Amino acid sequence: MATGFFVTGTDTGIGKTTVSCALLRAFAAQGKEVIGMKPIVAGSENGQWMDVEQLLAASNVNVTRQQINPYAFDPPISPHLAAQQLGTEIDLSVIYHAYQQLSAKADLVIVEGAGGFLVPVNERQNGSDLAKTLNLPVILVVGMRLGCLNHALLTAQAIKTADLTLAGWVANCIDPQMLAAAENIETLERRLDCPLLGVLPFDSNGCEKNSEFLNVAQFMNFD
Image (cartoon, rainbow, N blue to C red; front, side, top):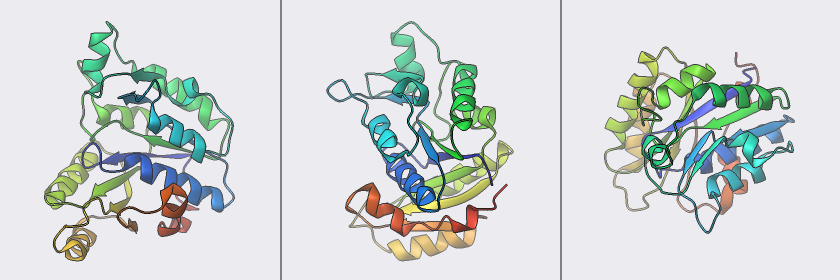
């Protein structure tokens, strides 16, 4: 089985953390020791980074916030800009070493990217480079709304161009008014060369319930 997965999305704010937490709980239900990692987070609320807090709550191995989140920035802006404002730069080797420490403590590490797959993380590198540095198969979260077909297919193409494995995708129904939602999901099932892991309904009752909608059993022998 793979020692981890990299979770990316078609955009920011489409439910990567929701899906990452659901994956953690689904794998934990299969008897795995799991840790969620958010290498880079931008956007704090009252001194807390909620993505990090949620991943900590969904993990079943005790780790510190610093271990799962090497880089945290207050303003909700692109990571490379947030780092520039602090006069620093995100170093992917720091994230790689933190990931290695986490992977030694658990069966599986779910690494949640920042923003979309190609979001800049420093002056030279982007989210794609982070995924390549960690060399993990990718799970794509598709926020089901108008425009998602193009965004999903472009992201899948970028993942393929990066020579990474697109292991599966999740349809996250973020727009309850979306027209032809089922037909859009069927379209992506035909066009994305990977399994649909599940469809998360709009406004589910927390990450605990969301895990029930995901099928991770097929990953138990994934390598």
